[in-house]
Amino acid sequence: MIASLSGTVQRIGKDNLIVAVGGVGVRVFVPKTVLEDVGGVGRTIFLHTHFIVREQELALYGFETEDDLGLFELVLGVNGVGPKVGLAILSTLSPEMLKSAIMQEEPVILQRVPGIGKKTAERIMFQLRDKLDFTAVSTTIPLVSDIDADVIDFLTGLGFSIVEAQSALQKLPREAKTVDERVQLALQHLDSR
Image (cartoon, rainbow, N blue to C red; front, side, top):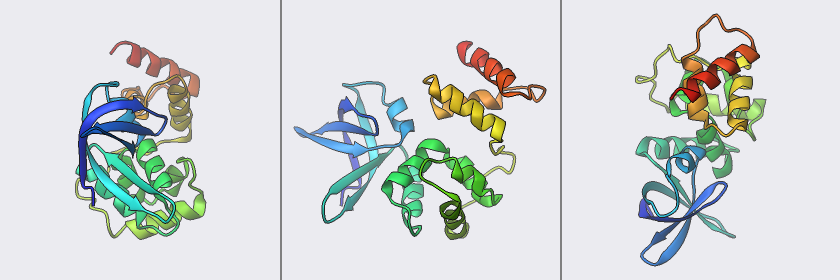
């Protein structure tokens, strides 16, 4: 029904934006990546949207790219996965990392998403492995180790975005093995930008 939305950001919430469109403030639920890229109140934004109608509510979900929207819609097709978990997936994992985890059958990566347990992770992998296009996914995309997951948690706790944390991790030398070493080097990299 509502395929896209363009307007001025009036308010930035924890998981949503209020976008002024033709004199009406529209609440749009968005992944963290959109919140981090919005640039502040008063900015113009364009989002590809998915409109959900339920008995008790109407909800609009917005994404920067059509690919992100398509991935969200595929995830919603998995039994037991609702829009909040779908947003959590796109807020926690990049589309490339999600596809790589599914391609390499690593449900542990999906289990790092808030709200996803072992059974749900396995169900997502099983139901999406034949629906995703893996041709653009590099097999060299590193999946996150437990140590790197701790580093990402630490960096995001300091206020860095998940994308910034993952980018910093990719620049670290292999010699840095401990969480402390990796955090220090990642902070140095992030400060030098």
